[in-house]
Length: 321
Image (cartoon, rainbow, N blue to C red; front, side, top):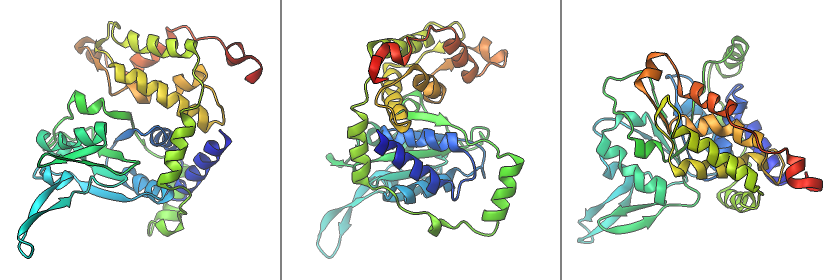
């Protein structure tokens, strides 16, 4: 697992040449990418979401395309279409921007639901269908989407089915005063993307996924994951709990997070660290909870506090801990 920890550290270092601070958010995104998952960045304009995604794509050495979502965007603008070639006298396939390694879906909630739905097949099955022909997407393939959570004019809320396909949702948040001074000092005039080195590749990411699959998860940790997810379905402040996909996501993400720490096994702290980002967009609070100003993060933190933690790593793995 030292190789994975080393690559994660290199990617973090290169990303922080442009993104000041935000180490925890960067690590969570890397965890999602190492797990093969998609990320939803929900934050105010100007918080560095688009800059972060572009910087990461350079460091990862992956093909990158940016698609600005607007109300007049059509599904064919995403997946592609058949176009008539007058010279050849026949139709030929034009692949859409989704056929890449990293797709930045900028302001995804500005597109109409029909267009948003065009991403469902790509995000889940890693393929698109054009005129009845299924076309596989490149491997790896990630959607890193952004949305403004406070602006509601000319926006369309993502349906639950699509939200559930995002591995995690997180916010960059405002920088501290010291971080903002550093942004002005180093990035005030321009964004020096040329300083970012490429330290990975699509093949390296595929190999990382194979190595992460070997991380050990004890029966106690698996039961802990399931218990946490089950409690979201019976909690009095939660109207709709997390799906079985959430359990699988926690399982995969915990393995990736453990590997990034240089460990070959998962401990309870790995699950606890990623629990809220993985789950906060998969639950729906009751109207009573919202009236009391409760947030998804508040309720998830209460579930963590109310759940017994499994045995320590030494008890689980003995001399291998």
